[in-house]
Length: 378
Image (cartoon, rainbow, N blue to C red; front, side, top):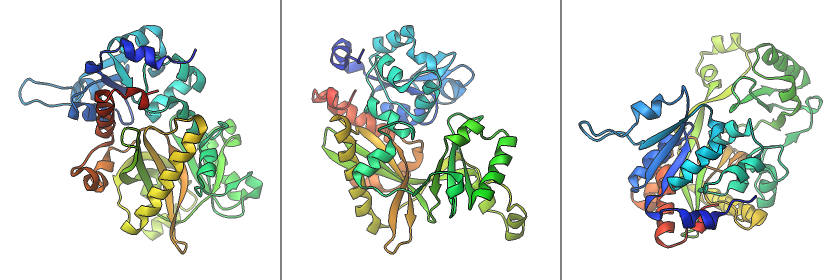
């Protein structure tokens, strides 16, 4: 049964809206952003993974005011958030849910995307129907969106025996469900050799390799373009730009030549370790905005709603000439990097640094005060 947004909002106390997120990925950014705009926040934690939110960043007033997390809700497992009693509590607290990557991954281990969309009985900030497009095996996936938007992405290779250049293989990580076990290969022999090592080490599975995506590896710096589409303003914003720190890739890059040569057979593992701020040359900004605008229009054509709030086009800048963006991944929700605020782009627009979490809270407050909540929630 489709979620009844209008009926749910009618039962809410609009003056007590609570931003809520899964306690991982970007939850602190959501909590701090809610606090900055006078909204309450609630973080859903999993047993054994709650100390960050319950202790180190909990709001305290015994002495100088500190912390940003108003309240937590501890569950045995993140996927229990869809249980009826949990959903009833969230509705009683007038929750607006901000989905992050951890939400998608942990719930998708137990539920299909259709079940997630229908069983989540609280409003999403953003378009709940677009979350599934991040998965490459969905019919209306990110490649379909990029094709529709005319956005260039790396050339796909059909199978290992067709590898004729340096490629990246994107397989699910066998042990860490929310990671992809990326590795590189120049030909079928190197693919087989590296895949065998990773299988032996338990990094990938045979099933994961069968469904892996193989893409041409493009030389150039990576940059995440973290955008925000504002239904209230009808405008696209660039919230910030960043790049990733990855194991063991960053460790290998830092080695002296002799040691790097000695480890030439070590598989490069691009597991997420963190993010760092990285700015663009100003001459690239117009291209970035043009690409973002085309993506917004393409996503809207899917269901008439499209993108609401944050999304990211994760790109490589290739040399050309002319140098250009090639998008290798799309995020259709809040990005994982809280450091985007430390690039100058929100200050150019708003006169001060604004985090993604606060920008979400700003949009929600404006929509509430203008009676337009249905335009930013699904």
